[in-house]
Image (cartoon, rainbow, N blue to C red):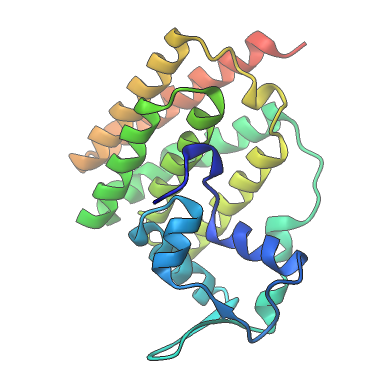
Length: 226
């Protein structure tokens, strides 16, 4: 059984946690795709795509018939992704607004049928969210699915930085936007507009939909920031 939305995390974050806890060392075996999907509340497709990125980064090696293993380099996360950086909620959303809309033009072209399934799954789980924590996690998962659908390792690394920033800001204004029923509906409607544009492979519409969505989030932040 997969875990609830509030427990969703990325494969990279899971590995980092295991390394810090001393449960995973260089040369150690990484859990199977199926096990990771169960542990992290992701689909196997999502896990597989994240493992592809980690392999390209040199953090893991996959051996046919033996499994997936942490490399010696993989015991340390890429510096730019995890290095402590002082950030603010507005810094983060402004940085996202500078690149995520244009990213959609790439996703609209590169996304596969499997990517569509994962994007739709995250969208539907977000619509079914019952608490702010669940909605926040499926929001992160939705944007992660979009980034991975670009099939670009640099984009995936940038998204890891954004996701890390969002999680570091947990409990701040970024995750304490007024989660009223109306705001749930607004955000999910905008997510659906982004997704439908991607499914239609309409690059311009998907870019505009993401731009509009991030401006909505920015306004929500300004409503609660001092």
